[in-house]
Image (tube, helix red, strand yellow):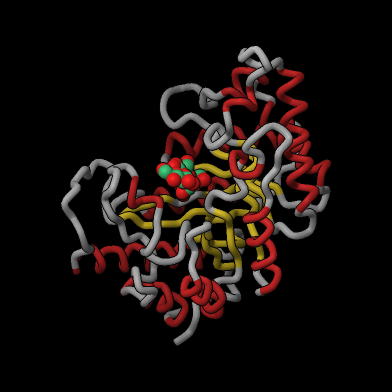
Amino acid sequence: MNTLKEQFQTDFIIGAAVNKYTDQSEQELLKQHFNSITAENEMKFENLQPEKGKYTFDVADQFVAFAQGNDMKMRGHTLVWHNQTPDWFFLDDDGNDVSREELLARMKEHIFTVVSRYKGKIHAWDVVNEAVLDEGDDLYRQSKWLNIIGEDFIDYAFHYAHEADPDATLFYNDYNESDPVKRVKIYQLVKGLLDRGVPIHGIGLQAHWNLYQPSIKDIKQSIESYAELGLKIHITELDVSMFSFEDERKDVTSPTKEMLYLQAERYQQFFKVFHSYRDVIESVTFWGISDAYTWLSDFPVVGRKNWPFLFDESGNTKPAFDRVISVKDNC
Ligand code: G3I
């Protein structure tokens, strides 16, 4: 049996998200099939600096060492995000919002500390995550970053990351990246950064997709549109949920044959697209390893299981695995 990384070695890097629950058997799958990892949570702000000035690097360090020890790349996720950033970061001692200058100083300190520590060891940093608003006319999502600093918080984040490690590859990362309305906004945001000379080198397409959405046409249009900007493209958080966004069923306890078939078909279509854009797509990362653990088992329906990957809960290959592998056998 060919492994994922061997099968796609002339196309792109194949990655997976790891977390503190990743066990020995999943580590074996990682070594066998993947040549890149991303920390699902452990490099986020609240994990690295839970209290002011008190950094906790233990788990992140272990992941970086694992990547280095197994000849894998590591994506850094993420430096500036509205989520998973502790409240204290935005507040002064009296509990009021800090000033723009103070927040920029804190942002710089965090970015410098983290990026410098892993200098030369991170293949690409997701510098800013999910800053674009999904619906409506506004470009930017409301957040403490936006409210306190203003729209240029994004420019500053990239400049600081670049100063901390001039050789680092810097990405803007977002979800719903294939939605026709949001695609235009993401394009506009990144184009603005480039026009202002901000050091950005890539766009991350999270690719949290499902059996029905988005359409292949929308995915292709998004890749083409982002590629026009001349930046690298990474698929950063790929998973294929068995449920549509609107499906609120709570009683499905195992995947049906039909679900597994449809999922295999979708995965094959996605990898055909990735293969056809291999000149611009440098890396494809799954947001997990096997169906044993996925954030989707709690989202959007709390406690409902989901089975979004190529390996089942025991680490065995699923129909989707064979169909993904077949993409390269047939070309
Ligand atoms: O670590 C604590 C644990 O100590 C505690 O017992 C438990 C109780 O709920 O919570 C644990 O924290 C959870 C954490 O994941 C680690 O498992 C949080 O509640 C939970 O909210 C958090 O969810 C993560 C989510 O980001 C937070 O926004 C998901 O695992 C992670 O997959 C998800 O990843 C994001 C990307 O970073 C950005 N793109 C979207 C993607 C999916 O939402």
